[in-house]
Amino acid sequence: MDETEFWEIIDATREEAGGDSDEQADLLVERLTRLDPETVLDYARHFEARFNRAYHWDVWGAAAVLLDGRGEREEGFDAFRCWLIGQGREVYEGGVADPDELAELLDDFDPELDGDGEELGFAADESYETLTGTETPDLGLVMPAGEPEGVPLDLSDEAALAERLPRLWERFGPS
Image (cartoon, rainbow, N blue to C red):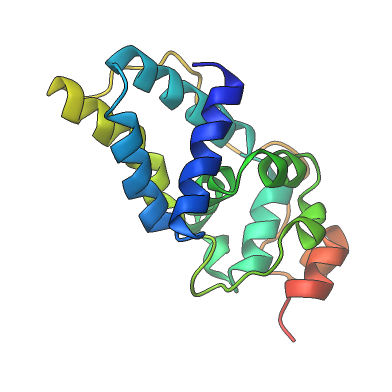
């Protein structure tokens, strides 16, 4: 599976799910279980590489702004990175390159409904296990250790968030 095929699967399932991340995860499992196990592992590598690439302070800051504080916790940030991948190539690439750009890339955002794509992160594992009866093997990707990339950010400091992500804060920050 190449990068284009990966994004085509993400886009097709997101559109079919109407933006519902849990439904998208179910659709991903359905779609992936129609493939052979090696292709599912290719998909998993693409997903994991993007998940790791989004391990950046400014992306975490965007999660904190958008999720009304839930994004400050590591679990919330992990779920947000999965959700960001599930939004497709344009939103993901733009949001990772410049998280403040999410102010323009997102049509709308409801912190009660959006931003939690945790189940998207498990779709490949579930599919592989369904196909093989075994757990997903080590994908051979180096997980980021320690602090995220970039300049550290106090995620509980509203002024720091507003300064680092001014457009996102203006559009989605607390009123």
